[in-house]
Length: 559
Image (cartoon, rainbow, N blue to C red):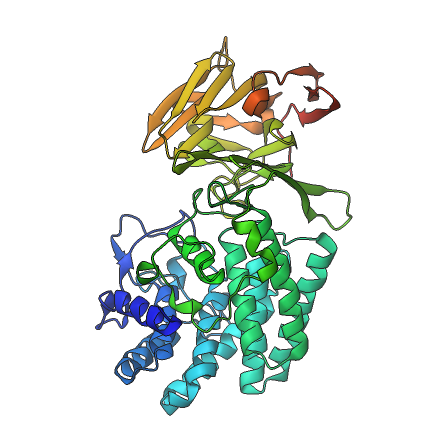
């Protein structure tokens, strides 16, 4: 099928979702749990998906879709805050049902997400707009650009930094606004300089946001008239595709970890389809006539460089270690480590908060005709706890890792709901979650050890040190094996009972330390622990290699 055929098919699949009265798409409600205050709502009218639909309608070039696209754009423009005296100036709400005043808090990224579609619609199809719509879209893009420039996101926020450069540079070129054009070029240059120095995107190895960066950089390269901008896009695209190719595991056809930001542990159909399109079928997940194609990919120019295509099919053993964060002084660094064989992959971060988007310890295993994953989580009343901090040292298939705590980190989100030393909790636990294909998966607890067999691959986790000074009497820390909602798990229960206040500021110790090994060495990886009043130190024996060492604070720390 041609790109035009797939675009039309995607548009027709959305036609039945269109609400003619509101002039927006109606979709099932879903939420990550923050920003929106909507709860127990079945259907919403989202601004982002609706404006993407409008651009796709115009991209078909079919006259019968033109009026609908114009109606949608009029509605979208009307939902933007255009009052420069408001803090939310230039942005949009997520949903028609929830104005900006009700969001908690509003999402300033929507200036970028909505603005990029409006500027593309005007650039590609503005000549077809009625005059009033042409002017209102122009003014709406200006408001979005002003909001983007006022917020001035840094290059560490990879996908939004790229999107903001996209909106302002193209708006500047389209409307003759030299101030927007200069800002967009400077921002793009800042991303290039930042990634050169770091050697990576700080939104490291994100299946979600690396694709956003690739898509927007590809479109920017295609649409801009500026040759320097095209060259910078090429440099950033090469870096992005290398990161994707380096972390693609041909044995499981998964994008392996660790992931700085991910919304699903197994590849989503959207990501699979994107990779299939970008590799021109080198990765074949779907029959082409049933591919879940998205309209925003049309005319994007997305293509994986031919030099990286072999990485998507070749099965080889490899180890990767990459610095993905460096503070301004250069003293504090964070590292990502990945080890792959033909049958499995294991990845860890050296230090990271354990929020729901970060997969700090993640393994994928080829299991018959499917894939099994294993992921570590820290759960506060069933939701990933941002004030839990993961720390690890990894060599190949062997890891020392630990979990400590912050007194002033986030609860469900790193910034939106920071704790003030205490949390109310009826349950806190560490979970080794196993999902995907659960055939040929077995888990056994032996007190302070948990052993797993994943289609013949042995995995063993041992508790080396455990302390949580919350007033609860414990004789032993044991792993509990269970199964629920299509996942198997081994849980180390920290607290479970009546809701109570847990005060991290008053704790003398709250720290857990473990060893983990995969494969033939799983049962032979041994570690010793030393501790004093302030720290816990584990040393793991690697035989002929220098030992692994991990040191953690005993008390919760303050950022």
